[in-house]
Amino acid sequence: MLSGAGVHSNAPVKVVLNPAPSDTGVVFLRTGLPAGEERSIEALWSNVTMTELCTVIGDGSSATVSTIEHLLAALAGLAVDNVVVEIDGPEVPIMDGSSVQFVEAIDRAGVIQLSAPRRYVKVLKTVRVEHGRAFSELRPHDGGFRLEVEIDFPQDIIGRQKKVIDLDARTFRKDIARARTFGFVHDVERLWKAGFALGASLENSVALDETRILNPEGLRFADEFVRHKTLDAVGDLALAGAPILGAYRSYCGGHRMNVSVLQALFDDPAAFEIVEAPVRRMGGRSELSMVAAPAYGPDLN
Image (cartoon, rainbow, N blue to C red; front, top):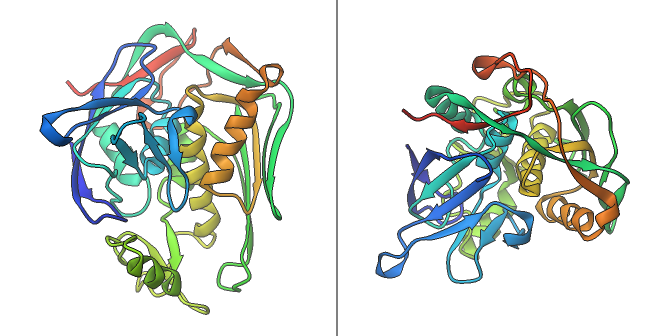
């Protein structure tokens, strides 16, 4: 179990990762609703209701779960395919602003190999979405899932940064999981007035003014900003419902662009196919020798 507060609502929330059978996918079980009701919401691009500030999914009723991207990134980064995420509030806790505490929780629980083959979304042709100067695209790529994420801020404290990774558990743990969310103080003050970012602090965000980083400890990586944007992309693209075989590229993207490129992919039946394929060895504590394509679920026993 994990507990904390939402970065926007500052409301306390508890999260439990429950093991699930093969072909479940990632499902959020939203509890704590009026009259003791609960609802299941699949973590799929088609259930996204908002991408302004964070990624939000819902089931068409009043049941929603927001700020899901950091938890989804941890699950995708560690190749966890099947899990029921029980959550008693409307927002996943921000923790330290990265995915690392979710990764540690999964590591403590461990993962088990399931007998069902893993399904993948294989990209067959390039799809691209644009918004002003920003763009995101998915294209065919041999060798797993590659991310090429580039950001370009006018402030010199961030500037132009690019990160290219081939996603696997070892790379995610080492290079991406610890990268924290960030924001400028003037933006946070504006969001506070609008009723957002009420839980933001130096304990869960990298705060900047125009010329300096305000966190006393500084950055975890020299390019932590683009690494966090990569983390967000891993989480948002997990909403494909299965691991992607292909390459993702973005320039000045964000949650909206990440989800939009998934919509563009699935709107074109000729752009993808669902395949079953062997997987590479996963790094870290969940490393296993595999002769078939296994699915994974968290083992909480």
